[in-house]
Structure formats: structure tokens, C-alpha cells
Amino acid sequence: MAILDDLKTLVECESPTEDLVACEKVATIATEIAKKVINSNAKVIQENGRPVFWLGSETPKIVLLAHLDTVWPVGSFTPTWRTEGDVVYGPGTFDMKAGFLQGLYALKDINLENVALIATTDEEVGSQTSRALIEKVSSKASAVLVLESSINGKVKTRRKGTAMYRILVNGKAAHAGLEPEKGINATVEIANQIAKIASLENKELGTTVVPTTLVSGTTTNTVPANAILDIDVRSFSKSELERIDKEIKSLKPTLQGATIAITGGINRPPLEESSTMELYAKLAASAKKLGRPEVGHVAVGGASDGNFAAAAGAKVLDGLGAIGDGAHALNEQVSISGMDSQIKLLNQFVKDLLSE
Image (cartoon, rainbow, N blue to C red):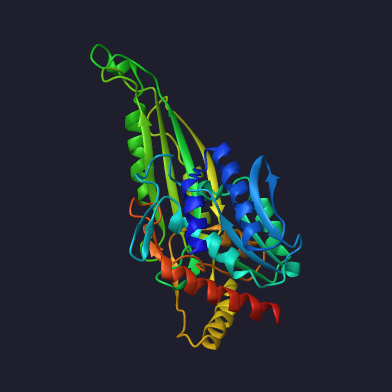
């Protein structure tokens, strides 16, 4: 099965976002696979110092959007590639090298005059370098089809927006036993801030505010002088993201003499159904042509580059990628038979969009 061989090649070229050399390599390998699958010139372009795979039109009306970076440091999986029956395991299989290949194979018999397959290499860290490119291309497209993984075959029509923050607390070191009163305890200060931050969530609206990584202090017998806290914020509502942004950026120290510095902000705006349901209806029609039941759609908490595309004004449909499980987990896996099924549906969908 040719696509399985190609997936093995991509997966075994491990490509954590932080490893620029590895991302260059996987993008180059992707062009070689594309030239084999489609008799058309794929290329790697540079966007703010990072590689981006590009196949097809320079000014596409239909964009298939993917990414080739993963969250996994090299060597996280042993072995890197493993198959059991209809399932293949490995880093980046589900998120989202299989989805990239499905997009590529779906374009085999399609004229690329008005279509492009684009794959970035910084999606897993917020698309800081590729965001402007995504927004520019999407603003001129009639449809952006995001090849992120499906939810058991269902597409994603709502995604939460995201915000990321870092809080740096500066206190004052002192001996914890001899004269702790002369110190300003950064751990206590950051603990006070965490309580305030966590209280900003709104469960009814699905808004989450999660303090994540925390670093504080240097030795067990020293009053900590510094602390660093990272915060992950997600919401289906733009106004909720803005509310929390205002609250976090207005935090003040609680201990006399302590200072806090806050960086970060709103990253991806929410993906709303006003941007997705028109294309979902068209996908349902394509599925019907193939004699399939309605695909189904869901809302999810994770964000993707589809959020940027929608904010740029494009009609978007997300979750057109692989069927499987375990994104960002050690059981990351893809259904082999599901790949063929998804390719056929995407192929029909693109053809139907082009015929309009």
C-alpha cells in the first residue's frame, strides 16, 4: 500500500517543532513524496525562517491546510513505527502526517490551477511564524479545508480560541532558616496569583483557565527570588477571551516589594459555526453522492490553523484528516482503512467545490 509506505517515511523522519533541521528535512521529504504521487512540482518555501511545504496554485481558491511538525521529542516512541492489524502507531501519525498524505492523495486526479496543499512546521507552538501566511492565503480563498484529525470520522465545526500567558514574579532571596523575614517569597506570590487566575474560568460557557508549568526557587534553604508560571486559556467566545485577557494583564502583586511581569495574549480566535456550516452542508452533499451517511460534526476544545483562516474571512471546514486516536499521547494511532475512505470523500468534496 503506497500511502502506508509514504506515511512510514514521514513518521520515521521525526519532526518536533523545536528542531528546525528536522522540520527542514521532513518538508523536503514531503516534496519528494508529492512529486512521486502527483506529477507536479512541490516546493519548500521559507516563511520567517521556517520551512513551509507548498503544492499547487500560488493564489488558490481552495486551500488544503496541514502541518508537518509534531509535539514529540526525537526518540519518544520505541519503535517509532508499529502496525497491528488495521492500526498504525507512531509520533505524528494522527496529528497529522496521515492527514497531510490523505490531502496529497486526494489531489491525484485534480487540476491544481486553483488548488493548493500547504503544510507548515510550527503549528504545535501556535503558528507564530506562519500565521501571517495562513491569513493572507485564506483571505483570498473561497474554501479552506483543514486536514487536522477527525473525531471518529466527524468533522470539526467549532473550535475554542486560545490565549497563552507567562507571569514572571521577582521577589528577594534570603536564608530560609536564619532570616526568612528579609526575603520576598516569589513562591508565595505566585501561589496567590494562581488562586486568582484559576477563578477566572467559566464552566457554563466552556471557558478554561489553566495554570500549567511552574518554576520557582533554587535551593531548599533559600527564600525563592523568582517564579515563572505559564497559563493556558481556551474559550468558544471571543468576548470571554477578551475578558480574561483584561483580567490577567491587570494582576497586581500581593506581597510588599514583589513585582510581576506579564507577557502573552490571545493567540487563536475561536472557530465559529458561522464560518463552517456552509461548507459542512456541501460536504454532506458530497458524502451523499458517494452513497455514504451524513458525516456528522462536533465542537472541540483544541485550536488549529483553521481558527486563523476563519478570522481572515474564509469559509473553513476542519477535521478532514485521519481517523484514529491519541493525539499528543503515547497511543497515537491511525486507522489504515480509514485513510482510503477519507481520501475518497475529500477527493469528491474538492471536485464538487471546483465545479461550482
